[in-house]
Image 1 (cartoon, helix red, strand yellow):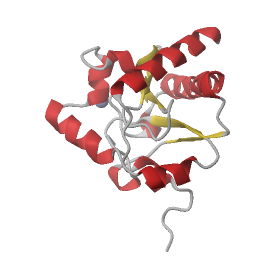
Image 2 (cartoon, rainbow, N blue to C red):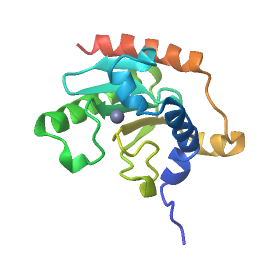
Image 3 (cartoon, rainbow, N blue to C red):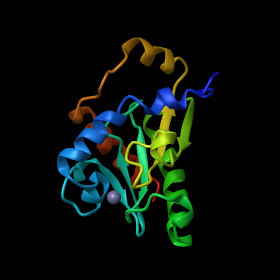
Length: 168
Ligand SMILES: [Zn+2]
């Protein structure tokens, strides 16, 4: 049985445990802490009215973004119309910004709803926007648990913020 036809389980699994560990240490939701400006605000690329865009701290590829509602909500069907519209609009703009910065061959865009589906912090939904290049999956399989340095992620955030501004 192949439970992983698109490689998505492999794609989003490696950093799940690290997130869970950090969330436990902080005794709260790290995404809500970002919204509140309490931590890792340098990882926020942009803030909308209802949603925001942040770097994934355990990126599958450089430029891996997340689009999240400000509100602590697990269920996609519980988003308001305004939140849903902005989630989609910010996802589109994330793709455009990443294209400007690094011109990937493709993207994985999606949500893991619930822990059983691979959601790392399943209580606060987050849409992944992952740039893909030919051969990157093979590369990651070889490299294994490689973790990008926070400084590298912050540099990516600077590049994406600049690209985002060009889209205004
Ligand atoms: Zn939250």
